Length: 80
Image (tube, helix red, strand yellow):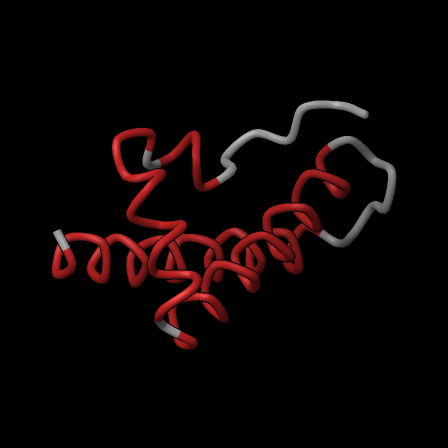
């Protein structure tokens, strides 16, 4: 299995324990993390041409990933 860049643990290396706790305690955070994971994997598959998509769709997915990451970051900052 190949390494997928931009995983949450890679994006927030100092918040791994906090992310784990929030996934267990906060349903909204858990949903955001799962959605981020799904979008990130889809982007990786598109980038590696495993599942190619139109440029516009890839841009939309990247925008979605960025919005999810921003919200996750806000929640991590508020919880720390």
